[in-house]
Length: 451
Image (cartoon, rainbow, N blue to C red; front, side, top):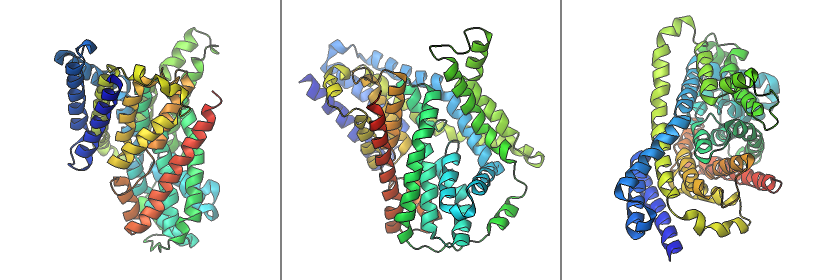
């Protein structure tokens, strides 16, 4: 009876959350806080032995909110500031041009996927698509390819790293909630994102190519570069992304059980500069060096915009952690102990995230909510190793890809900036994201069999 009531409570909570956010357009921050309080109070009344008195429920909500803020609040703020500056200074365009030179214009579809893959690490997929869509349109016209192909490839590249690789806020929040090593999450996320992007490129070539959309580009590539004026250098543009990733990765290696750098001064230095807070803060200062002298007066405004843009993500992330803190007080682990032997493994977080994504539309909200629900189950399901925790993070990310449709703002960004009709966007964007997420979870399941 307790198990039935437990799952009925959780399912009802999720349904109410989905309805409030999707149908009544309430902000996820408010919804998750109210749901967290309601679930805690209800369970405290039904099972007084749980210790969830009204006062304890409020304390759990506050503790959950504060704990995730202390873990990843600064990291999300810094990551968003970096993305804003890369977008405003034209550094994102410089990175795109560098990738285009590397693969060649004849491989323009591959170039668009690769551009998205790199740009999606620090820049939100919506913003990244807006920034790079003129290149997509110009390349489509120059190579005689349908704009649907270019738009689909670019969208897939951006979406892969947006859902799977920190310092994008969703993956960072999941890593913090599930106790996954951030350096290892970045490394594995970058690797797992590669097949996801390849699938998107293949889908663009095979399926989106059947949708004929003329490019009608206003600018050629050369004119586009002139329009932006003097752009930052290639190395300088990449450095705000690469430096934090390298430093966080170095810290992860330094902290291996074998202690390759010893435990003395080198260990302390590498662990300090590789701490995500310090590494991302250094990335912020590097990104600020991209701002030309004539634009220095805008530095405060751009940083302020980054801080403002991160506020919504922080609010949702922390509210999700509050919901997770209440869930941890429920006897979930004891009730689902049998899940260990079902063989479903990474499919469980994938399915939960997929359902929430399809219902609510927002990938980040689906990630944060699912991570909060999975946190109490990690030990009972056997995901206790560092790599096991990372696989759960990525499985949730894969579920949050399936699938971008009409209730997702990104769906409309891609369709509007690629001149797609709604039915064409369903074929290109929705179909592509569904195939991407499914492909990623298959890869993750295969990997999970060997750990």
